[in-house]
Amino acid sequence: MGELTYLTGRGAVAPDQIEGMFVGWPSPPSAAQLVAVMDGSYRRVWALDGDRVVGYINAISDGVLNVFIPWLEVHPDYQGRGIGAELVRRLLAQLGDMYAVDLCCDPEMLPYYERLGFARLAGAGLRNPGALTGENTPQTLSDL
Image 1: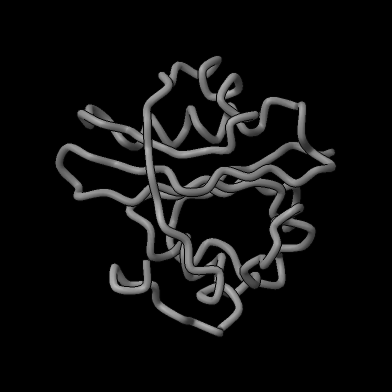
Image 2: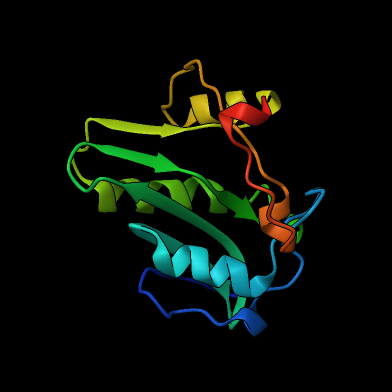
C-alpha cells in the first residue's frame, strides 16, 4: 500500500477506478452508479491508493441541521488499517456543527461506529433492490 490520498470534490473519481467494492451485497450497484451517488451527495470523501479507489464515505443533508451517512466502505484488501476511521473523521470535519449525524448499519457493525463516537439509535427503512439492477419496482404503502 502506497501513501493514500483523500479526495472530496465532485468528479474526482471515474468508474474505471473502482473495482472490488460492494463485497457481500446481494445486488451491488455498478461503479457508474457509485460515482453518480457520490457526486450527487452533499459531502463525500474518497480514499485512493494511486488511482485505485480503496474506500469512500458520503453524506446526504438538508444543509442546515441534519445529515445522514448512507455509505462507508473500505476495500477488503485495505480493511483493518484505519482507513474507515479516517474517512469518518474527514467527513465529520466537513459537516461542521450539524445537530444530527445519523447512519444505519448492520447490527454487527454497531461496535465499530460506537468506537468512533456514534450512539445506538432505533431506525426503520424500506429497500427497493430493483433500483440497483434497473428493475425498479417502487414500493408504496398500498403494496405493504
